[in-house]
Picture 1: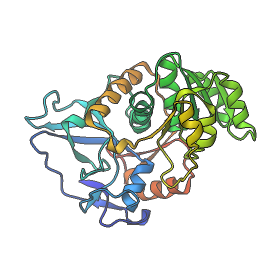
Picture 2: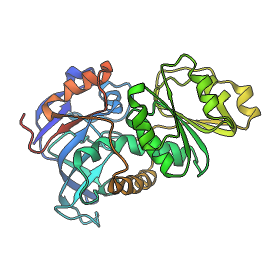
Picture 3: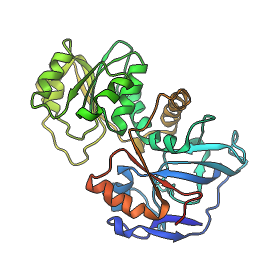
Length: 328
């Protein structure tokens, strides 16, 4: 079978495209024919070794897929050959990745794709939307009626945060570029502040006269001093990006307002947390509420190019690698 894989840790140039043996499913696994897979920043962390996790070479890269069940083991009830499915948690903790014609997925990490949902759109939002769900509900403890500030509302995770929070009954204030303002409003943002405005913190305070109950920064800036100043009593900051940032923690204001800062990485989410996120994502996909900002399809053979561009910061939206039917 064709796959995008590595035989050592390193830069994008270590990615190979070629033939690997077809994987064999275990007693609780599902063998999936992959149609499309997405490219995420976390994929580059695993490939480079920046995030240390068990990697067995040759190692198939990638974590997200949409495909069709080829065969389900006896210990994988609920799945049958021909089912349309998706997964967003491969390529980590010893699991081989998703960028191959066939992959093995543990049954508790595989979800049915709602009928009529476009596979490219689904794989493009799978990782960002799961990240957003965990940030808002699992770690952010969001409740209806609260005010949420989303830094970077026009991006992949940011747009999912805006859509999910507004649908849950929160008031959303987002920062975004001017070109993304209307899209953020269409997704449910009550206020959108231009992130290039030199007075962005002042604008955010004006938009949140009673403070923010939840503050999520997708831009990896992690300005904790500005965030804590903006928080209402018992407000929460959720950190989900910026692996190399070392912000100042304003401890005094933080504890005097009964506030908290919590970080999380989706790769460490439990299968129960991921399944809860998947159920929410499926509802929103079926409704048409979740839409990726932009999608650029490339063939599987372009995986190294996709990683280079992602690390260079030249990707807008999401790169999706076509596996089934792609001409490589």
